[in-house]
Image 1 (tube, one colour):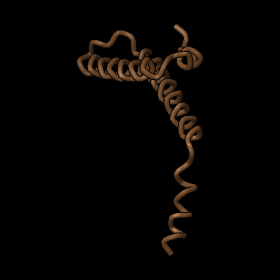
Image 2 (spheres, rainbow, N blue to C red; image 1 turned 60 degrees about the vertical axis):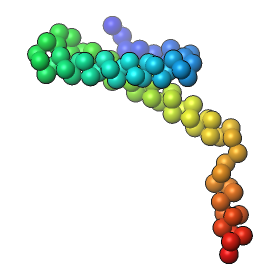
Image 3 (cartoon, helix red, strand yellow; image 1 turned 120 degrees about the vertical axis):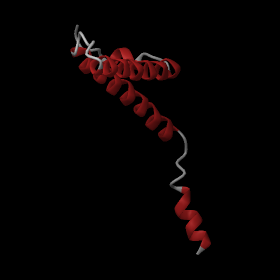
Length: 86
């Protein structure tokens, strides 16, 4: 099974993205639990799930940054306020 492609993740909505992050974290937990109880049959799934989680969180962060850039920056207002206070 090849590693998942990030283009598949970029096509998800924000709600689906959050659901996928939660599901992937849950799956990783279950794999760790199986490993601890020596029931793990497919250790390569760790790599696939960690890769998938990294993709999901990267896309989530990209969307957060684009949302911040789209709104007026609060940082540009702060120096004006501090200058007015002096």
